[in-house]
Every structure is written in C-alpha cells, then in structure tokens.
Image (tube, rainbow, N blue to C red; front, side, top):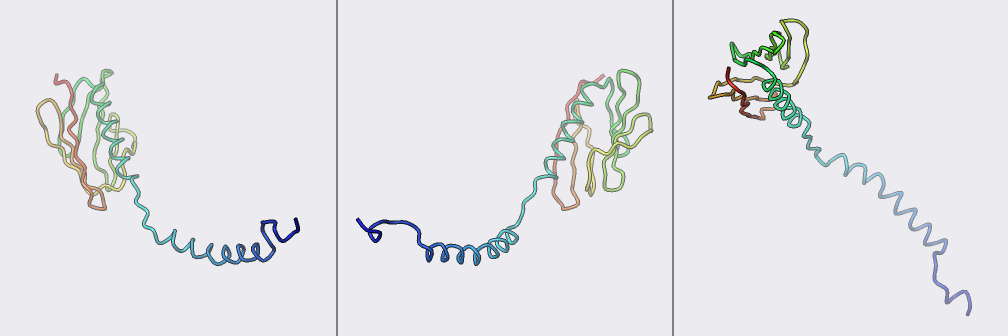
Length: 138
C-alpha cells in the first residue's frame, strides 16, 4: 500500500474550501440582512398589558370607565387610573406618579359590557387588539 491509495484532504482541497468560504461569507451577510425581521414585541406587550389590567381589576373593589379612562378603587381606598397619555398608556395611583404600561399606541377605546370592559387598542402601525376584561360588579 502506497500513499496513492490512501484517501484524505490534500493541500489543494484545503485551498479550494477556504476560497469557497471566503466568497460565501460576505454573500451570507447580505442575504441575512435582506430577510425581513417580523417582530412580535408589540403584540406581546399588549397581551401582557391585558393580563396586568385583568389582575388589577380582580383585586379592585370598584371598576368603571370615564372619559377614556379606566378607574378602580383598591381595597385600601386608593384610586387607580389607566389612561392614554400621548402614545402611551399610563397608570396612576391617586393622580400621582406616571407608570408606563404600554408604548406606541395610536388610540384606545373602552366599551362597558355586562360585568366588564371591552378594551380596543390600535397601535401606531395600525394593528388592532381587543380584549374583554371581566370583573365582579359591586
């Protein structure tokens, strides 16, 4: 058995592989940048906002809407409000503070329904979300 019958990489094969990689790597970067990146951050944020709002309603003694605001009375007597503030939805306690719960909002509407509120949110991109928040009426 001589060296000719053995199989393996030669120096020429190695140079060929390195050349192909050097040509393909920049092209790969251009292709990756051209693929559109679909982000679900806004949808996740809105769903999380709906969850927080439902929790807040569950622990409140009174919930009602007034002038594009959701108002709640906590068991401790604090007045909690959610309202649109520019392109944000903020939460305030006793008209103090400024806790941002949601960003990039075009508008929102609050529709009273039996034992709850239907919240409709439109994002700056025009995406629409809707959720009915149920609570115990007092």
